[in-house]
Length: 399
Image (cartoon, rainbow, N blue to C red; front, side):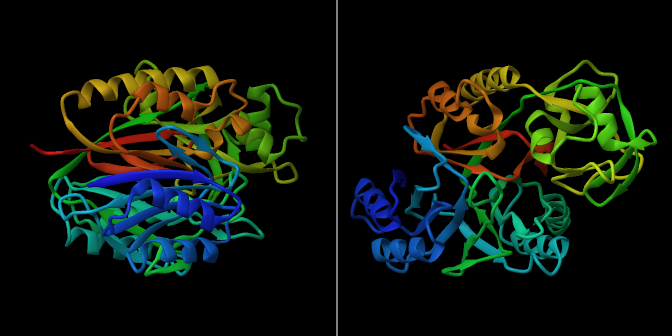
């Protein structure tokens, strides 16, 4: 049995009690909780313990919560998923070593998951996105996933997930791990083998430049494109005033995209891995990306964040997903949605999450959260981090 509940209140205890009332008196075997970032984490943990006792907890902070009937990102939302029964309850495996070495932490967790899964298992990864608050440094999901995939040793899993934040301004993040609130931790929820996942990735960017080559880069900081200052090139392509762009302004309008496969194939949004721009440095002429996985020689295009294309992608993607899951025994819908897609950030007249809910109209338990980074299968069974996407996944029970 899987159940979901959603509430919003300035007091975590009140919101959790409301969720508990919705869920009924039965004691679950696992609670997966997404906690709005304005709730003090220890207060949220205490409220969950009061409501559920010593039931194992997973989840953590969320920039916002998306339920089947409501959503919000005020910071006071709480969304819960409860699992009861061995045929639906995932096993939790964790690491708290992200700060020491993200790749090594991912590798170690991947090895553990490999030994506790079978080919085709559905896995959900949740991790603290923020390594350091000031100056801001993120835990790079690309390095976590490189290590995790290596640790799997060829195990073909269906991996989705996301980076946890306290708010859409990337102020902080935290994870429930070992019954406590943790920084620099990552959890893998391995679902039982009788459950399988069907996932679609919802996009919303289009190329506005030709292919360019990264000619100088330092980690996530792109210094040159085609031998010119990267910021100058991006501003020129977007028609922005040179030398005055802030990182926040750029992050709202553009990404850098790497096209997968044949570079001359017709445009297909599903062929692009896009990287959000975290900040710009006019003095250095550079832009800093959310991930450090591009290198010298990487061919990229400037991608415009297109709200109409985003909403079209939702409608097409949800329609495709509904066709693929038709007639299946769906037990849970999960939505990991980039915080930048919220209308307060994107400027879209329609809330993208609201369109997902209304288009899907789930008749099964459904819960989502606003994330810093989204993880989804991109090519075959190889999952990788993505930016400015929505990852919509439905768990179905094999007959």
